[in-house]
Amino acid sequence: MWTANGVQLYSLTGPGALSFLHSVTPSDLTLLPPFQSTLSVFLHPVTGGIVDDLIITSHGPEDFYLVTNAACKDKDLAYISSNIERFSSDVKHEVLTGQGLVALQGPLAKDILTEYLTSMTGSPVDLSKLYFGASIFVEIPPLRERLHIARAGYTGEDGFEISISEKNAEAVTRGLLGVGSTGGRIRLSGLGARDSLRLEAGMCLYGHDLDDTTTPIEAGLKWLVGKTRVMDGWVFLG
Image 1 (tube, helix red, strand yellow):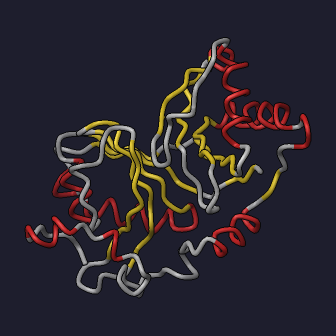
Image 2: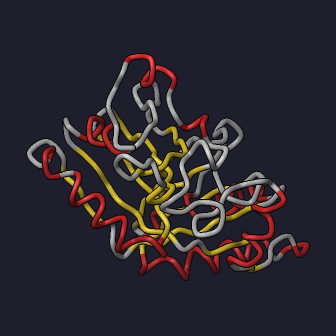
Protein backbone atom coordinates (compact mmCIF):
# COMPACT_ATOMS: atom_id res chain seq x y z
CA MET A 1 0.00 0.00 0.00
CA TRP A 2 1.22 3.48 -0.84
CA THR A 3 0.17 6.53 1.15
CA ALA A 4 1.01 10.20 0.66
CA ASN A 5 1.74 12.01 3.92
CA GLY A 6 0.92 15.66 4.69
CA VAL A 7 4.16 16.68 6.38
CA GLN A 8 6.69 19.51 6.69
CA LEU A 9 10.42 18.76 6.86
CA TYR A 10 13.12 20.70 8.71
CA SER A 11 16.87 20.53 9.25
CA LEU A 12 18.54 21.65 12.49
CA THR A 13 22.32 21.76 12.58
CA GLY A 14 25.03 23.30 14.73
CA PRO A 15 26.51 22.95 18.23
CA GLY A 16 23.31 24.24 19.83
CA ALA A 17 20.88 21.96 17.97
CA LEU A 18 20.60 19.39 20.75
CA SER A 19 20.19 22.04 23.45
CA PHE A 20 17.45 23.73 21.43
CA LEU A 21 15.52 20.47 20.97
CA HIS A 22 15.89 19.72 24.68
CA SER A 23 14.38 23.14 25.44
CA VAL A 24 11.21 22.61 23.39
CA THR A 25 10.60 18.86 23.79
CA PRO A 26 10.53 16.57 26.86
CA SER A 27 12.60 13.89 25.11
CA ASP A 28 16.08 12.74 26.10
CA LEU A 29 17.96 12.78 22.80
CA THR A 30 21.44 12.28 24.23
CA LEU A 31 21.29 8.53 23.68
CA LEU A 32 19.69 8.70 20.22
CA PRO A 33 22.21 7.02 17.87
CA PRO A 34 22.96 8.49 14.44
CA PHE A 35 20.29 7.61 11.87
CA GLN A 36 17.79 6.61 14.55
CA SER A 37 14.41 8.32 15.05
CA THR A 38 12.02 8.95 17.90
CA LEU A 39 8.53 10.38 18.30
CA SER A 40 8.38 13.59 20.33
CA VAL A 41 6.21 16.68 20.91
CA PHE A 42 6.65 20.44 20.94
CA LEU A 43 5.19 21.84 24.16
CA HIS A 44 3.55 25.14 25.10
CA PRO A 45 5.15 26.96 28.04
CA VAL A 46 3.61 26.40 31.51
CA THR A 47 0.52 24.44 30.36
CA GLY A 48 2.41 21.61 28.67
CA GLY A 49 -0.15 21.56 25.84
CA ILE A 50 1.06 19.95 22.63
CA VAL A 51 1.91 22.38 19.83
CA ASP A 52 2.48 19.46 17.46
CA ASP A 53 3.89 15.95 17.45
CA LEU A 54 6.99 15.29 15.38
CA ILE A 55 9.59 12.70 14.42
CA ILE A 56 13.18 13.59 15.30
CA THR A 57 15.98 11.78 13.46
CA SER A 58 19.61 12.15 14.48
CA HIS A 59 22.07 12.37 11.60
CA GLY A 60 24.88 13.15 14.04
CA PRO A 61 25.55 14.98 17.34
CA GLU A 62 24.89 18.36 15.71
CA ASP A 63 22.58 17.36 12.86
CA PHE A 64 18.86 16.60 13.22
CA TYR A 65 16.05 16.02 10.74
CA LEU A 66 12.48 16.84 11.81
CA VAL A 67 9.15 15.75 10.36
CA THR A 68 6.06 17.66 11.50
CA ASN A 69 2.44 17.87 10.36
CA ALA A 70 1.84 20.04 7.30
CA ALA A 71 -1.50 21.19 8.75
CA CYS A 72 0.46 22.80 11.62
CA LYS A 73 3.31 24.22 9.53
CA ASP A 74 2.52 27.91 10.16
CA LYS A 75 2.12 27.35 13.90
CA ASP A 76 5.22 25.13 14.07
CA LEU A 77 7.39 27.59 12.18
CA ALA A 78 6.31 30.46 14.43
CA TYR A 79 6.97 28.29 17.49
CA ILE A 80 10.44 27.25 16.31
CA SER A 81 11.37 30.77 15.24
CA SER A 82 10.33 32.34 18.55
CA ASN A 83 12.13 29.77 20.69
CA ILE A 84 15.31 29.40 18.64
CA GLU A 85 16.32 33.05 19.04
CA ARG A 86 18.46 32.50 22.11
CA PHE A 87 20.28 29.68 20.28
CA SER A 88 20.53 31.55 16.96
CA SER A 89 24.32 31.81 16.91
CA ASP A 90 24.68 28.04 17.51
CA VAL A 91 21.84 26.60 15.44
CA LYS A 92 21.05 26.71 11.74
CA HIS A 93 17.37 26.11 11.08
CA GLU A 94 16.22 25.30 7.55
CA VAL A 95 12.75 24.59 6.21
CA LEU A 96 13.24 21.89 3.58
CA THR A 97 11.07 23.19 0.76
CA GLY A 98 10.64 21.31 -2.49
CA GLN A 99 10.68 18.01 -0.59
CA GLY A 100 7.97 15.42 -0.28
CA LEU A 101 7.50 12.37 1.91
CA VAL A 102 5.73 9.24 0.79
CA ALA A 103 5.06 6.10 2.76
CA LEU A 104 5.25 2.54 1.52
CA GLN A 105 3.41 0.47 4.13
CA GLY A 106 2.42 -3.14 4.60
CA PRO A 107 3.93 -6.63 5.00
CA LEU A 108 5.34 -6.56 1.44
CA ALA A 109 6.88 -3.10 1.71
CA LYS A 110 10.43 -4.38 2.30
CA ASP A 111 10.34 -6.69 -0.71
CA ILE A 112 8.97 -4.04 -3.06
CA LEU A 113 11.38 -1.34 -1.92
CA THR A 114 14.34 -3.75 -2.10
CA GLU A 115 13.46 -4.64 -5.69
CA TYR A 116 13.07 -0.98 -6.66
CA LEU A 117 16.32 0.17 -5.07
CA THR A 118 18.27 -2.76 -6.49
CA SER A 119 16.99 -2.01 -9.98
CA MET A 120 17.83 1.70 -9.66
CA THR A 121 21.28 1.34 -8.10
CA GLY A 122 22.45 -1.62 -10.17
CA SER A 123 23.60 -3.54 -7.08
CA PRO A 124 21.85 -5.54 -4.34
CA VAL A 125 20.34 -3.46 -1.53
CA ASP A 126 19.76 -5.22 1.80
CA LEU A 127 17.08 -3.68 4.02
CA SER A 128 16.82 -6.65 6.39
CA LYS A 129 18.95 -4.96 9.06
CA LEU A 130 17.36 -1.54 8.71
CA TYR A 131 15.25 -1.97 11.81
CA PHE A 132 12.19 0.07 12.83
CA GLY A 133 13.12 3.67 13.63
CA ALA A 134 16.37 3.55 11.65
CA SER A 135 17.14 5.42 8.43
CA ILE A 136 19.69 5.46 5.62
CA PHE A 137 20.61 7.48 2.54
CA VAL A 138 20.56 5.63 -0.78
CA GLU A 139 22.08 7.17 -3.89
CA ILE A 140 19.93 6.74 -7.02
CA PRO A 141 22.25 7.50 -9.98
CA PRO A 142 19.58 7.69 -12.72
CA LEU A 143 17.73 10.37 -10.71
CA ARG A 144 20.90 12.11 -9.51
CA GLU A 145 19.40 12.08 -6.04
CA ARG A 146 20.12 10.61 -2.62
CA LEU A 147 16.91 9.32 -1.04
CA HIS A 148 16.41 9.46 2.72
CA ILE A 149 14.69 6.20 3.66
CA ALA A 150 13.36 5.54 7.18
CA ARG A 151 11.79 2.34 8.41
CA ALA A 152 8.74 3.97 9.90
CA GLY A 153 5.11 4.84 9.28
CA TYR A 154 1.84 5.70 10.91
CA THR A 155 -0.26 2.68 10.05
CA GLY A 156 0.75 0.13 12.69
CA GLU A 157 2.32 -1.99 9.95
CA ASP A 158 5.87 -2.50 8.77
CA GLY A 159 6.95 0.00 6.15
CA PHE A 160 9.13 2.88 5.04
CA GLU A 161 8.93 6.65 4.66
CA ILE A 162 10.89 8.02 1.72
CA SER A 163 11.94 11.66 1.44
CA ILE A 164 12.04 12.71 -2.22
CA SER A 165 12.67 15.96 -4.05
CA GLU A 166 9.72 17.52 -5.80
CA LYS A 167 11.28 16.95 -9.21
CA ASN A 168 11.65 13.19 -8.66
CA ALA A 169 8.55 12.45 -6.57
CA GLU A 170 6.49 11.23 -9.52
CA ALA A 171 9.32 9.14 -10.95
CA VAL A 172 9.93 7.33 -7.66
CA THR A 173 6.20 6.83 -7.15
CA ARG A 174 5.75 5.36 -10.62
CA GLY A 175 8.83 3.21 -10.14
CA LEU A 176 7.49 1.67 -6.94
CA LEU A 177 4.06 1.19 -8.49
CA GLY A 178 5.68 -0.55 -11.45
CA VAL A 179 7.62 -2.96 -9.24
CA GLY A 180 4.61 -3.63 -7.01
CA SER A 181 2.20 -4.16 -9.90
CA THR A 182 3.53 -7.68 -10.33
CA GLY A 183 1.05 -9.89 -8.51
CA GLY A 184 -1.02 -6.87 -7.48
CA ARG A 185 1.20 -6.22 -4.46
CA ILE A 186 0.70 -2.45 -4.23
CA ARG A 187 -2.17 0.01 -4.32
CA LEU A 188 -2.43 3.78 -4.07
CA SER A 189 -4.24 5.04 -1.00
CA GLY A 190 -4.59 8.33 0.80
CA LEU A 191 -4.69 9.84 4.25
CA GLY A 192 -8.17 8.49 4.92
CA ALA A 193 -6.83 4.94 4.78
CA ARG A 194 -3.89 5.96 6.95
CA ASP A 195 -6.28 7.45 9.50
CA SER A 196 -8.35 4.27 9.79
CA LEU A 197 -5.22 2.15 10.20
CA ARG A 198 -3.67 4.37 12.88
CA LEU A 199 -6.97 4.10 14.80
CA GLU A 200 -6.72 0.31 14.74
CA ALA A 201 -3.15 0.56 15.99
CA GLY A 202 -4.09 3.00 18.78
CA MET A 203 -1.88 5.82 17.43
CA CYS A 204 -2.64 9.46 18.22
CA LEU A 205 -3.33 12.00 15.47
CA TYR A 206 -2.90 15.74 15.94
CA GLY A 207 -6.20 17.61 15.74
CA HIS A 208 -8.13 14.57 16.98
CA ASP A 209 -6.42 12.95 19.98
CA LEU A 210 -3.81 15.70 20.48
CA ASP A 211 -4.16 19.49 20.53
CA ASP A 212 -2.89 22.66 22.17
CA THR A 213 -4.73 21.88 25.40
CA THR A 214 -3.71 18.22 25.71
CA THR A 215 -0.55 17.29 27.63
CA PRO A 216 1.56 14.22 26.84
CA ILE A 217 0.35 12.65 30.09
CA GLU A 218 -3.31 13.16 29.20
CA ALA A 219 -2.66 11.76 25.72
CA GLY A 220 -1.13 8.56 27.10
CA LEU A 221 2.29 9.62 25.81
CA LYS A 222 4.15 9.96 29.10
CA TRP A 223 6.81 7.61 27.70
CA LEU A 224 7.95 10.59 25.61
CA VAL A 225 9.06 12.37 28.79
CA GLY A 226 12.65 11.24 29.35
CA LYS A 227 13.10 9.93 32.89
CA THR A 228 16.70 11.12 33.00
CA ARG A 229 15.58 14.64 32.17
CA VAL A 230 13.04 14.66 34.99
CA MET A 231 15.51 13.24 37.52
CA ASP A 232 18.30 15.57 36.46
CA GLY A 233 15.99 18.57 36.59
CA TRP A 234 16.60 19.58 32.98
CA VAL A 235 14.37 22.48 31.99
CA PHE A 236 12.05 22.34 28.99
CA LEU A 237 8.98 24.32 27.97
CA GLY A 238 5.82 22.88 29.44
